[in-house]
Length: 404
Image 1 (cartoon, rainbow, N blue to C red):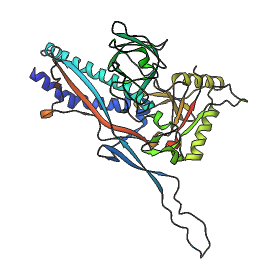
Image 2 (spheres, rainbow, N blue to C red; image 1 turned 45 degrees about the vertical axis):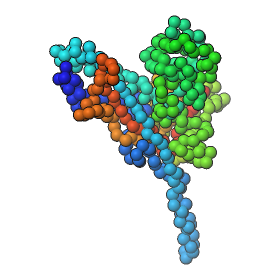
Image 3 (spheres, helix red, strand yellow; image 1 turned 180 degrees about the vertical axis):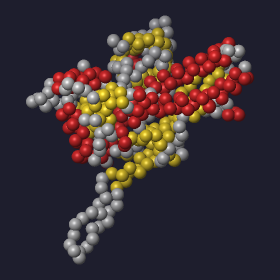
Image 4 (cartoon, one colour; image 1 turned 120 degrees about the vertical axis):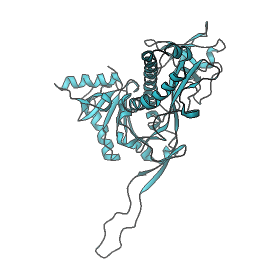
């Protein structure tokens, strides 16, 4: 048993860590694969970064013997963002370990299964965080039934961010938890009707869940700073008040039809090019990545089929494929909001991190530790990081696009 645990510790640190880190950093999501990861600008528990904006003012024309232009340096604003704590945890029972103690192949299969599960769960959660906000809202509750036999049915506005097995809390828009509605396990999801069944206590009242949201257990306000934060209309971003800095506001234009050429709600090269031109002319930003929901991508493919005989396909880092818009990859992502297309300059995004993925180590460097009072062992993968967009005004979003 001691040898088995020792082998497991060594395998997790020396074999699995590098492979899993590579998968989590580049292979779980096409947008994440485009974002540079760096330890720069990390100070203690915070990211502090000087963001230049505007132009150096010390430019001017003059006479042959007149005064030189007045010097005026660059403009800077300081971004401040607290590092988020990202965790991934595996758990193995003592019984399972002992059952495979004399069978090396069985034990390897046990570890492989746990690590594959960790990568799948991490892929789902980190992928959805890219498009959400740090508040971590998974879905808004539309209605719910009274708990019966320990199960409650909740109707939500979207099931895109939900999966069976997740543990969720019910919170208000300000993050206040609903009594009794914490760490509820998602039992089943009816995706067609957007109904979710969760295991819960019988003390929850129907009215208590009105105008509330589902979030991952204990995660409200603790998730990555995603695209929802960047494209928010009001409030603050990276410690700065948006109203005080015009360049903090991205290009965000609800899709309006050009009545002479398209049907309302359809996407086209002209509409996309208009957004690209706006960013180049007004923000000196070049779009290098376009991402949308699958329905919006199908809408665009229908447009292409009507006007082109061939559609170019691009191979991206991480094994992803995309169709091409003037050489810019267009990809669909399961977590991109419906009816929406993002046109991004990913060179302006950085994932600032204290370090890459590491195992939490205990006494003697052990990563597998017994859970207190339980016949189980666990290991926890951790990363302290968050995302900053250096130039929010260099990003664009088109909404109200018809899903095909």
